[in-house]
Length: 254
Picture 1 (tube, rainbow, N blue to C red):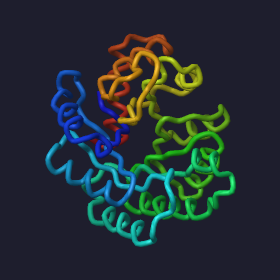
Picture 2 (picture 1 turned 180 degrees about the horizontal axis):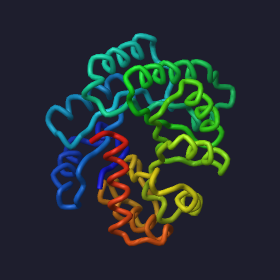
Picture 3 (picture 1 turned 60 degrees about the vertical axis):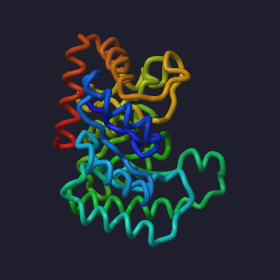
């Protein structure tokens, strides 16, 4: 298994150490470690120097206030400097939840930041990891087509069939979180989307409900996701596991 989306720098140090030590026990072979701001990029990069299972991606998470322009410039500089060592640009996207809480939010600055990261993804032929759900995914699809982005990963995707049709036509990836075990909305997405364009993730340390309630989010939870995906797709668990891991390795060139 490979965790296709996790915030390693959001764990407390003792939690992260324990998690990393336990990965072989659960057959977890790597963590796509996304970043959320400049300090996050630096933390993820430093962790990668020590732990080779941590595979770094640099970006700026959209669910926060617009930063000083210098912060985005410095993240861009890190991408330019390390573009051959990082596996992706991310997490980037649009502030769906912030906008929901504050409908008067000016969205244009967020769109401009996303466009800047799309330019870099195109220039360096890097995958881009996207925070984009529902109507935001529709607009992001317009941008991806405009910039002719070949490698896009919508993490924890939520959206309608029409949007998924557009994503599938361009062979864009989605990743499934452990909530697929108990959320019918996610199960419907798993049913519709081709497993050949699917990965699994935790988005840790984001907490989950159902059988995972009151537990620290750990990549081992992906096993339950794989079992659920296999059941929905009508295939053996081992086969689903093999396909999902293969997809992640190919997409991220691991």
